[in-house]
Image (tube, rainbow over all chains, first blue to last red; front, side, top):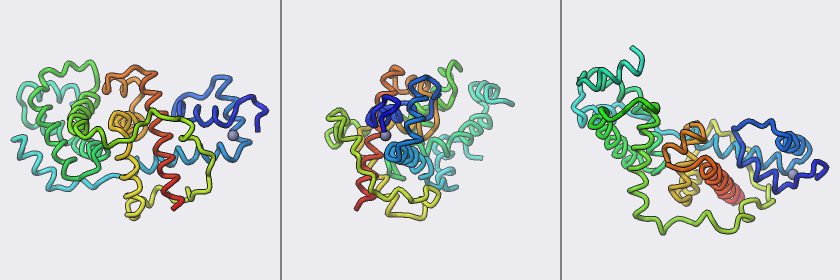
Length: 78
Length: 186
Ligand SMILES: [Zn+2]
């Protein structure tokens, strides 16, 4: 589990720091390799990604009434 | 007309231009406000306050940042003012970090995110988890990860340095993941 000299805890912490950022430093390459070989960390990585995805997709419908109330308040109604 | 030209027209009092600006951002602002406060009525209220501020002070908008960045900052300020009154209710994200990285992956993460809107139980889990997170962390997570802004823009809106944004983001992600993981175990 540790042949790249990164611990799982380090990997998990790094995932949290750099998700969505460039992953090309030597440290990141070591982490990518670790992810390929460690199911625990891979699952952790996936669950962090999924957490973000859940909050992205959880939206409310913006209904026309709310739009009309807004335009009225702003004095911009047609 | 590009956005810059629409903004210039709106500044001179062109109502159609102002209405156009409102229309391009109302959905985004409404949902961002909802994601912070988790309440549809308050989200509508915050959205209205935000656009009232925009109409009133668009003249002060200097175009150095994006209009969206400027609007996000107004929303963030409204929300933070409101939520900080109840600050004691939030868990501290600063204590023992080891708790975030528990090695328990027994939970069911096989839920498909696409189905979120049909799953009221999941929606409640998501609401509960994020409302436990202190608003200062919540806003960083929402701007950077959910709205997809850069770390720099997030820092500009929240008046935090880039390392401070990263550190809050890191804690917020770990905290939310842990909360969901525990909820999925139940
Ligand atoms: Zn590992």
